[in-house]
Image (cartoon, rainbow, N blue to C red; front, side, top):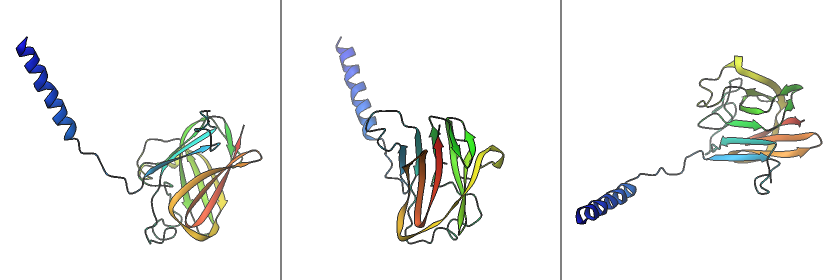
Length: 182
């Protein structure tokens, strides 16, 4: 019995020492964030119509669009993994029907307008493995110049008469993607 108790004691100490040796990472330079529509769905413990998961890179004194993110080139709309947008109901974007499901969201920024892309390939890193053949919808939206720069990429949904608008802002620009919810 004493041997069993001694063995259990050493096993407990070993597990405690192992737990202390775990090296936890620091805060990511582009932390992950969520946006819901309606925005209070999570707080009300109700199912949202849309959920967006993305990472928020910071400006850090850099010129973003046209320089860091080149005009005319597919951009992952965030950092790290490609973001994921989940529609819990069928929606219409740019006049095209999109079935409920999870998609990735990309953009092709230009000075006066962006092409927003809903793509069926998920679980990828950035735009490195982006496949145009998996585009579900492409639609152009105008660019609005902001009076004050946005330091970290931000995305938020606002209510519209027939659904929501996904507002994307970073540096000195913003765009809005209209989404009709069925």
